[in-house]
Amino acid sequence: MPGGAQNWGTMMTDPTEDEDEALFQAAMTAARDAPPVVPAALMARVLGDAAAQQPRRWRLSALIGGWQGLGGLVAATCAGLWIGWSAPEGLPDPVVLMGGDAMAGSVAAFSSFGWDMEEG
Amino acid sequence: MARDADHSRSDDALLRLYAAGDPAAARALSGRLLPRVYAQALRLLSDPAEAEDVAQEAMMRLWRIAPKWRPGEAAVSTWLYRVTANLCVDRLRKRRTVGLGEVAEPVDPAPSAAARLQGAARQAALQDALDRLPVRQRQAVVLRHIEGLGTGEIAEIMQIGARAAESLTARGKRALTDLLAGRRAELGYDDDRSD
Image 1 (spheres, rainbow over the protein chains, first blue to last red):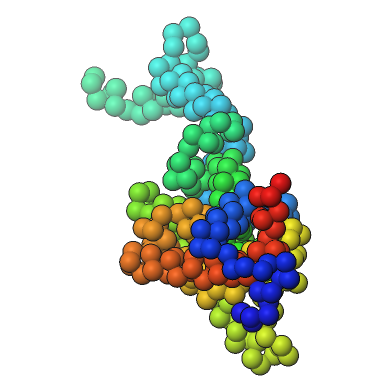
Image 2 (cartoon, rainbow over the protein chains, first blue to last red):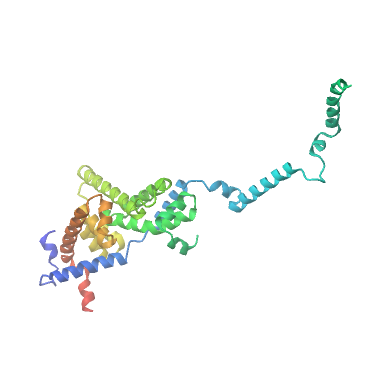
């Protein structure tokens, strides 16, 4: 640093080491107390980057209504499986419902194919 | 996510949440870490536009590493300080190279850049003094005396031994003290004391 830069006119004596230390500490404290403010545009860019880079593991669940939607979907799937599997009494036979008489006829044709004749 | 919940979570935990897709985690991490990254870059580069670029790039690297982050291996903030420091050093090296060939005058580290920093005369004077330190000393002093980090963390960030970090910090502090003493009137702390 040029020597002339230290001549501030009003300072006639060299500061002591203690004074220099106090000056250093005061400058550091001031710097800590007034940190630079992050520009809003920078924060927005950083958050935009974060969104673009974020793994999409949760995004599918968001599409179907979050975790509640996902839970509902799982419950409905399980209920459907159970109803189909257990065939509750009081409900009509789904095979008859689907095929009706035609299906019943094919069962009869199959049984009259000749197997019964062998018995006698 | 509630603000209080953010404060109670570690950087590691927030980074894990971010990697799991929690959008609030990015906001919490950015609010916590970006000011430190930006301040460090600004102190080292003394140029707001460059500091913004560096801060954005450092945070981008954090988002990218999040899915592979191994908790407990390093502190997130230490890792980020290191990335920022390396990006700043790269910029300063380039600045020096470009300065010789393309810029008519050497980069002026002083008032014009520093004054833009915050407008306050004290801040400008401090920044001007910091700019006059060798880069490694500047880094060490900023990390120790402004960011308040310990020697071990500074060593990790600067990728040197603890003793070297201590020595850099001490030399930087001595040099900065001398520079500030020469700017005592500008800094104006004597006025505060006499009041």
